[in-house]
Image (cartoon, rainbow, N blue to C red; front, side, top):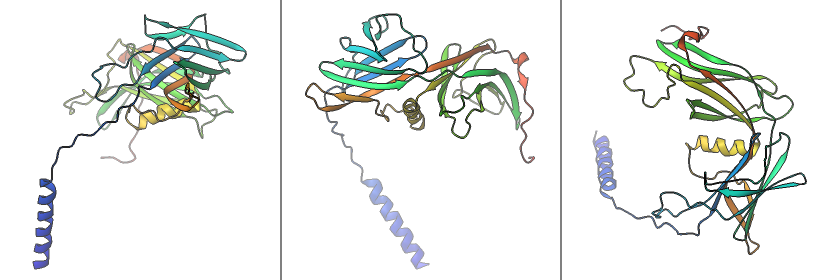
Length: 292
């Protein structure tokens, strides 16, 4: 008994020591020169490039400064397309009519005040959405409405996908998929839209598509580097980090530098439907392996 009492007394004393040792500290953020952030895309319809600069942690700027005087080019085969900055949307756009072609490898070249950044991405073929629509299911008294889509995976090659779900034109969720172990198979996507449970007090954390609202499903065929980048963002809860190095950089002094951001060329497939509960397929196939 005395031994137990001694242990308890020691634990209480240690707790008091640690709880009383409180001190406010100020982290000394290291100030560095602004870095260039490149966000660039190529798809079947167009191409666009965003260029901005980083700001220090203690900066009073609410938005990153936009770079408007860089030299931007896109190279593929023996062709070179130059880009110009547009004040309308703060993006660089091709000077001539342009649309990406699947199977083509594109190289983005950005020159900014003597520093040069390059990145390469191959555009994959679009996938075919073979079925889509709404369905509902009830599990343990909770009724859920889902948007379901099936996609035919391209056989004979590694395929990486980024998919989006839009509610009335606003992206409400996104995720990634790799077809490893499912080469050439039909891939299934189920996205919850509405949940009915009278026991739930608050549903603020959920995104709901109202009856009559437009649901849009989009799947993008991307390269592995883009997949790794988006997957890293997903598993780190949308961090603002730069987990994948997209750009090979060379400074005006001939030194190797790293560019932030990403460059992706992708093919997109999408489908839209308007939500009507009366036309929803009722899925009663799911059953628990036991009864409550």
